Structures are given as C-alpha cells and as structure tokens.
Length: 444
Image (cartoon, rainbow, N blue to C red):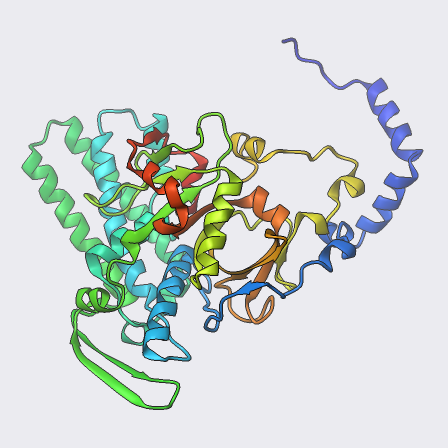
C-alpha cells in the first residue's frame, strides 16, 4: 500500500474543525490544569462501587508487598493463611513471602540458565533467545509457579523469615541479578559454540548458581532449615509447636490443598478455543516442576466457578490488568466510572479479544477475591483483597464492577470441585503457546 503523507490542506481542515468545536474547546480548558483521568471521571458510575456484598468472607488485615512485584506470592499466601488462621484461632497471621521469593529467584535463575543452554544453537537475535534475555528473572509469577515452590521448599510463618530492605525494594537487586545472568549467558553460549564438554558446561553452571545463592542470601538472609511455630490466639493464649522444617510445616497446615486447585483463564482469542488446556513454552521457575497449565473457559463459566467457591466460604486467587479504569484512593476499578471517549473525541473501543491480540491489555497483578454482590443470582460487583497496604481503598480492600471484571480479569485458581463437570477437561494434552503469549505476562 502506498504511503500517504499529511498535507497542509489537511492540517488547515483539522485546525478549523478543532477551533469550531465547543466540545473540544471545553476539553482543552478542563485538561489545561487537571489530570485527564479526573476530568473523565463519572460520579454516577462510581456511586455503584459500594463496599457492600451479598456474599462476603471475613478475612485478615491486608498485607503490603511494598516496592516489589511479588503480588502473586502475597495473593497466594493470603489464600493459605486464612485456612491456617481459622484452624489456630488467630486474629493476625502471615506466611513468609520472602521465603518463597528467595527460592523462586534461585530456581528461576537455574531455569534461565537451562533455557539459555536449550537455545544455545540459535543466534542471540532469535526471537525466542531475545525473549529469554529480555525477560530475565523478575518478581512476577503464576499460580502454578507458586505451587512448584511450595511443593519443593514448603512454607514458613513470616516471623520466622521476615522482610529485609532488599526483599521489599527489589529493583536494584533484580538489576544486578539480571546483569549477572546475561554475563552467564554469554559465557555458556560461548562454551557451547566452542564445543565444550557437557561436564565442563555443567560445572560452570554450578559455579554460577553457587554465586547466585550467596548473593541472594546476602539480600534475604539464608532460609531457615528448622524452626518453632509460636503464636498467640484470639483468647491471648500463647502456643509453641517445636521442631518444624518448612516441608513438615507445609504438610501439617497446607496438606494437599494446592493440588486441588485448577488454573482457569478467560481468553476469547481465536488461538485459544474454549474448553481446551494451554501451557506457555519456557514459562516456569522450577526445572522438573509442574508446567504452567490453564483451562480456558467462557466468562460465564469462569465466574460461576469463582462464585461457587466464594459461597463455600473460600477466597479466590486471581490475575487481572489493574492499569485500566482504576482509582487507588477510592480503591475501585470500574470502566463505567470514566468517559474517555466523550472527553477526548477518540475511538477507544476494543473488545477483550482485541485487547489481547493487539497488546493493549494483559495480566499485571494478582489479588484475592473475598466477596461478590449478587442481584437475582448475577454479579454486580466484587470485593478484592489487595497487597498494597491499608492506606488506599477501604483499609486496603478494593471493589471492581462486574463489567470491569468481564474485560480485565483473565485468570483464577479455583478448587476443582467448583468446576463441576468442567474439571475433567484438565486431563487434556495442553496446546503449547509461544513464550511471549499475553497469558504469561503475570510472570514478567
């Protein structure tokens, strides 16, 4: 198709149109000294975002991931801690997110190096190699990656392995680690190209991992091997349970709960037929662990499963795009609370399918659903436990509209029993998606 440059006549026409349009002139006045989001705000829509729900699960105080991207770990441990707190009659309790983050970082470094070796015959500018190198090791993750870490390393209470400055301000640490991993990638790829023996390559990789382990211990502290579980219950009675390892504590208080969960998605794109399972190539953390696995459902089926689990008194881990139509102070996400098209005069219509295919929207944050408001059995709004501290929203709890949920919620982890007959579909051989598929972005 022939390229067509902008002409002077077109510029004059568009200028005349702008000057003669009262709506555009009014918008220019409003936008000259006010945030665009504030000008587009629709108060009528926001009134419906009330913190009142027909199905609501009492939960503990919110957590705070601080300056880190560990939302998936905070959300997942928030699901587990509710079961433990209920069993032990606790009014406050957290599992250590740092403990899981340490092992995720370490395992993901190994996963990175293995991916580098797997693709060592490809040029550095190959798209797959470029994806590995640019993604590196970061804070994000997927539900199945959480399961892998817990299965291998167990869990510990937060007061056994608490936060450090680096664990909750991860930017500089990640930057140094990823620079090191690129240096390791250079060395390993050169060894492969030079025809080095497999034993020499593995020895070099082992040395690299040893250095990374030491660096992570400096940042987080070395993870505990044994500990005592101390707690004070709601009746102010002190308890101590001695001699746990992270694995035995997990066996005692988590059991097989994680194995009961299924990761469901709603991805209405042509490459992802409903009722099929999917995985993403080169997405993971533990080499030899469980592959990331999704079951794609219609949004109606997706929400029905989530609602059934909530009605059973169990909170739900989920992934969404929180960068759209949100207001942090109010603690709300609602596409009906903004009218950007009226304000801007631009065509902003994108379906959920278009948003995924054209990279407008993808998962970037994991949280916990703790309630839903039903009107004649249909959801109108959802209660959300976030991990951004208690200074925003209603003491850190948020609400989203059902229309926002339809458009920007992509993934949830539900127990198989709440899927009914759909649960049998998880036994299918999964379709393998490209490493850069938008369903994998929560791990970036």
